[in-house]
Each structure stands twice: as structure tokens, then as C-alpha cells.
Length: 101
Image (cartoon, rainbow, N blue to C red):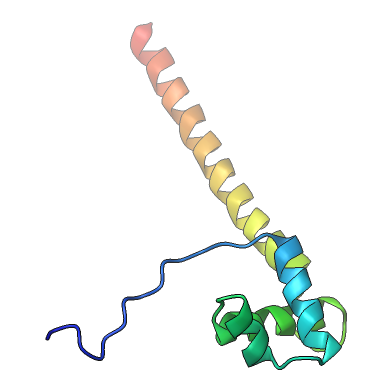
């Protein structure tokens, strides 16, 4: 009786950009509502709405960060982390060179 009324959380899934684009196109056609498209493809309505919203931003129809800007920010973070890693390795190399002499 513990599980009555409680749904198991859905496992996190990932989708290709092509699949997302198809779903967005289905929603934009207007044949079916976002909720119906989500139901037909076993997706959450929230995810589909986010994909549609992001597509509108990318197309310049709505204000917000484009996917490219988000990717750029992620790449800058990764670049900064990698530079820090290189700096640490340089210091470690210098330390061990001194120790071996």
C-alpha cells in the first residue's frame, strides 16, 4: 500500500537535436497541441514546451540566450578549467625537476 498514489520518477532520457527539431515542427504546424504531441511521443509536456521555446529563441522570434551562446559559455568554462589544470601540471613538473637534481 506504500506505492498507492506515488509514481516512479521517470529516468532521465536524452534526445538528438534532430528528434527535438521534428517534435518542434509538429507543434508549430498546429495540427495538434503541445500536450497531444508530448502524449503521442511519451514525452513530458514541460520538455516539449522548453524545446519549442528554445527553437523560437534560436530563430530570433523570442528574446533569450540562443543554443550557440549557451554552448559558448560552457566551452569558456571548460577552457578555464583546462588552463587551470595545465598550470597545476606546470608547477608539479617544476617541483619534481628540483627534487631530482
